[in-house]
Image (tube, rainbow, N blue to C red):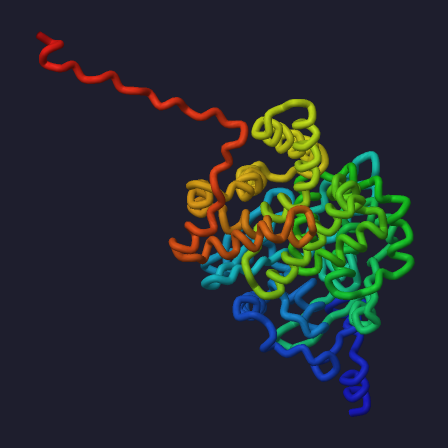
Length: 445
């Protein structure tokens, strides 16, 4: 009786089934099965009914402990991908190097991974810097917990028993508002340098402090980010910028001098008074939209981050005598090409970014039929939002933004009143061609 009471209050050691870990009961952590999504419950219940172990893992458990709504629910199991697929009718295996299973339940897709283990030094495939190139060996639950990055992400939740399995004191660190690396931080950063960026993103998003021992190696090892594939850097950058806390993320990146490995031109932009204000306004606007569950566009955000680089080159080329339209196209291409050498911004964003930049010069034209034609552009609304950011940052007069705010909603009569007269200074007036007098009957005779 007393033994059961101690297990209930302090948790129990489950060495026989799960290795050396603390098992925390529902009465202590308060995370209910009802907090798990329908699809995640169906997956864990289905796998357990088939004789396998299955747990909700990672960020979902962390967010539930922090009273946040998880973005998605990932499942870890001792079943192989083929065994998972055999259990569920609507399931498909994805990936080559790291095989996962996507199980579909209506609009929800649940990602299921098999327990994995970290390879020993003599068998791990690494590059000359120690970055792991291949890490896809199946393991057990304890080994899977050890290979995860931070203690807050190394938790396992069983919806059937409503217990949390904690191998690395992750619950304690979450309660202390601390982000701590599992294992030796320097070794883990060498294995995957992106973990340095992830530490900054999670700390900013969750409002946590990075543990000193976890933060200490970053200053010396940040150069390893140059060895990371461009696609991975882009993926981490998108997570950072679209986290809903991009302002805090960028602030922490600059404080830890990590932004050079993410978006090299960001430092140059933020050193300019107008550029810094413009970028911060764009990030704040994106954060507000994400928190309000409004749609956001990565292309719009990239266009905002690179705008002052484009503007600077555009103005410089015009001073050299290049025509404005040609100068703008050359500036856009040059900035995008330079950026791709570090972070491979997908070319599918190019069209949208260039359209937003090209529209900015057209907002200056407020006479004749030009404003009407601009209103018909598919990207008008995005370009208009971009213009308002420029007005708020002080780059252009607020009067320009106010004019377009009124013009787009005004009736035809008011729009006609708002149009400015055609500019005729410096333009040659066309000579009216005089018609020859028609021949008279007498002349014809």
